[in-house]
Image: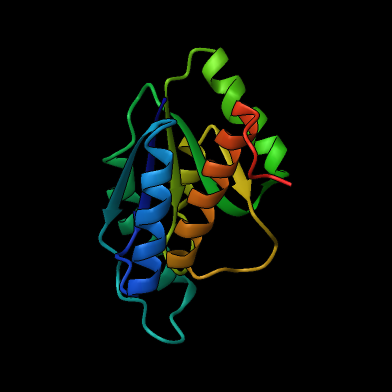
Length: 159
């Protein structure tokens, strides 16, 4: 299985980069992982809705350039469907059984994803109704993908 994480912005904090590297290494025995970073736009403080729409559109265009036509796209969105860890594991397993060998997971920038990206997505996934820093979300997502593979392999990790 090929899994791409398409994310807006760079991870600046060393401890987050270290965690991303660790989970990437752990996942290498289960899938081919590729992390694609697209440039983020500077969001002015107290930006109007119009300015925020323009920022999301620009970031969305950058994201969509990396979306493959044959990939199954999962967008992380606060209004998406929430799954348990077992539910995510089952989803990944079912995608493989149905012939999807390429999953692309999309993490938006600090103000979310453009509507065009959400429309292209095959599935919208929410981790919580709470908002998380988008850089931290990469670590959380990678940990959950790793947990899903451990669950599907029947290996100890998930209790």
